[in-house]
Length: 196
Image 1 (tube, rainbow, N blue to C red):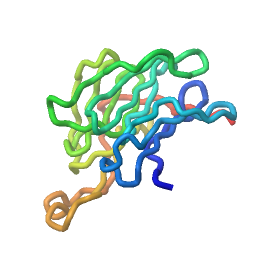
Image 2: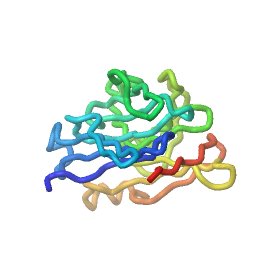
Image 3: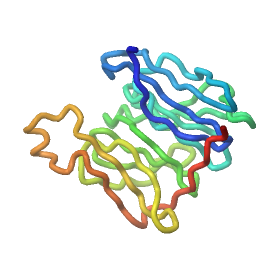
């Protein structure tokens, strides 16, 4: 009863990853986890997180990405043939020096990771080795989750939020809470289906 879901995505093997977190967000440190449902089994795979985010998968299904937003790091972990994590996660991108917080993420057709960055008003693109490639500004500060869609999956969409903003903050950020679309910055992949 003290937790809620936050961020989830189907993996390339047909499983589903779902993050849970304390209902008080960052004020509930370590209360969250990432779980995986696969062929009738639900298993906790990463406990002790605070705000799980950035769940996405390489096109070949051999790597998963995720973050615990409060740590300011995007991690990667190898997956076995059935999509279960193998070994310990490694840091892909450390955003701490920039003061940036990773939120939702998606992988494109070139294997790059696109990450919405809470408070930064952008979606940043990173190569599979963690190199920063580019950032696409959005019209609101609290960018929350990107996705590719439209014809040829060539439109980058990104949701934003106005959570925690008082009247003054909302007046300064009037587009907060809207979804934005930018064409021609990348090409996505079809999302896999969960195998029931």
